[in-house]
Each structure stands twice: as structure tokens, then as C-alpha cells.
Length: 130
Image (cartoon, rainbow, N blue to C red; front, side, top):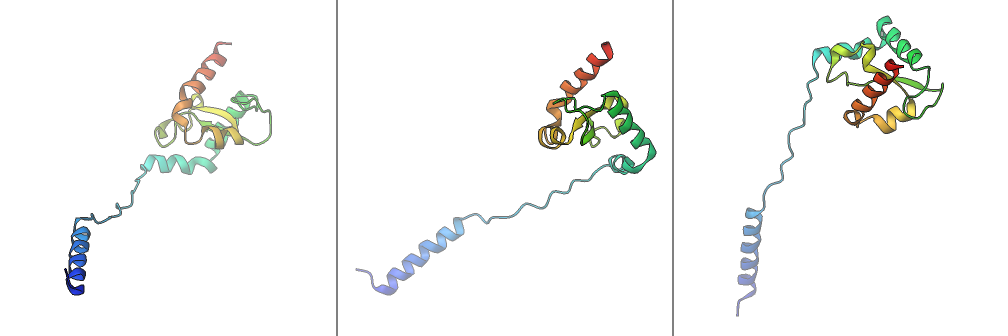
């Protein structure tokens, strides 16, 4: 039979082995997303006359109605079909814009833009055919 001191030493040895086997949890370094200069420039366009004209053109072309749910008037936003982050060169291209209500823009589309590119592009093509 082991003495109390021997049992404690045995337990401590097992614990130290477990501790040594356990991998240290390391936190990954924070992800730094370096945005391109052209994206920053595209973002800075919001208060320029060119951007305001682009936005108004999109809203007028779409008859001031959301192209997803059909809401007329109210809080409408001009949405970039291809994200400014991906294609800053198309920021002021009228074929890269569509009108969405605030709800559709924020809740339905934001974060899922790539799934809507074809739908929005097709909507614009069909409108041009009329």
C-alpha cells in the first residue's frame, strides 16, 4: 500500500504529464484587412455631387420603388450590384446600381450580395428590353 505522500506524488506526476500533453491555446493574430486605396476613394465619394447624381439617377430610373419588394417611396437606397470593395471602378456606373428599400437592403441583401448579382443584373436587362 502506498503512503499518503507517495499517492500525492503519483497524482502530481499524472497531472504534470496531462498538463504537458495539453496544447497551449494560442489566439490567432488579429486579421488585418487592408482595403485598397481605390476602395477608400470610392467610399469617400458619398458626399460628392457625382455620387449624389448617380444615386438620383438610379432612384429615378427605378421609379422610386424597391426592385425586390415593390415598395414605392419611403426610405430608399441605391445599392451597388457589384460591391465597391470588389469593383471600385464601377462605383459611379449606372448599370451597377439598383434601388432597394431600407429593409431589403439591410436585412435581405447585405452580407449575401454575391447571390443577388445575377438577379439584379437580369432585372436591369429585362427593363432595358422593354
